[in-house]
Amino acid sequence: MTKTDTNDRIEELKAEARRLRATLAEAGTKISHSDALERIARQHGARDWNTLRAQAVTRTHNRRPLAVGDRVTGRYLGQPFTGYVYGMTHAEQSPYSRITLQFDEPVDVVTFDSFSAFRSRVSGVIDDRGQSLYRTSNGEPQIVVEHVAL
Image (cartoon, rainbow, N blue to C red; front, side, top):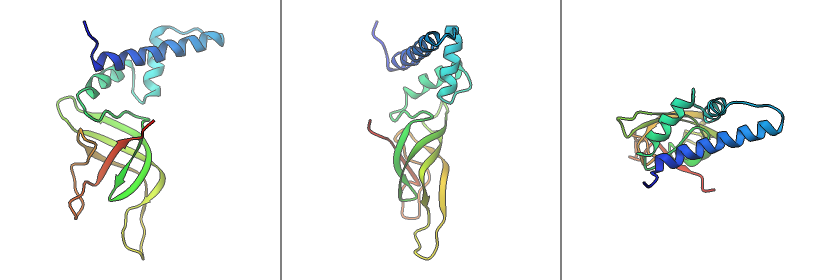
């Protein structure tokens, strides 16, 4: 039987839990494997292990899998940004995700020279290519999100 992307992602998360458990044991704190899984889930922004596991399954159907904490780059209202995924909600029956982005530096969302409006955190709905459903007046997606190359 070959592993799927889903199994690979879940195995990566379980390996994180094993490493956490070993590190804590070396420091004199023993925890159960299930407690380690719960801690890993919270580190990834999920409520609990079951939620994180479900998100791992859902993301495999997404061509641009993003998760809370991922470093990203892109454009917001035509302005370039770098930052990270602050929040993410996937609907299994839909190819769309609600994303909240935290920018490293505030982005000026106004193109006029005499006026500025800066945003540090924004939310929107993106498709499986990382582009928002809504467009600016010139037809460009309001949000375009890409993973930062590591």
